[in-house]
Length: 178
Image (cartoon, rainbow, N blue to C red; front, side, top):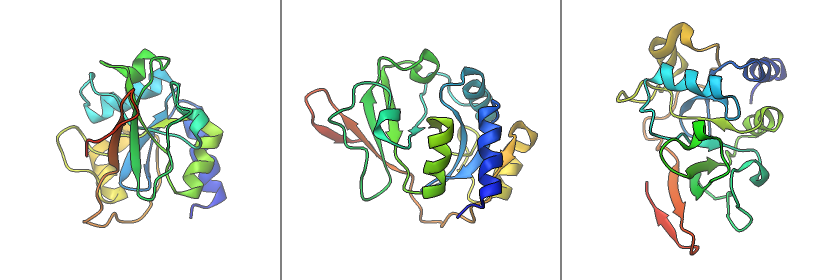
């Protein structure tokens, strides 16, 4: 549970174009507002992320998802990112394809933040090719002052997997990718 003042400060940072490291419903993620191109590019630069790879987008409700998603289920029992065609999404999110993975995290304070900021990109908090940060101190060691705000969510259990990744094809069939 995040204190309301810390939550307000996080929202203010993100609305001002900042980036932050927060514990999601799975791992620590480095987050920025998906509709803020400059903030998204800051995340890519901090991570040294392959510019052709799109990021998972956290949403607070299905209306936040890019693309036509009326029949798409975003609520699952376990953390699940749903990869759907999103041709209306901005180019800085799509990268080299028209697909975006969306996840509705089951963390109430994070849903409240997203409801105020809009969708957030949330790749894992680690430079490309290195293991994900399992503590806020590991994230600070990775990113230092490149990140505007760090929110300590405790240590990630060593057996915590990333979210399950499901692709929904145009014909409605599901494919598990991770």
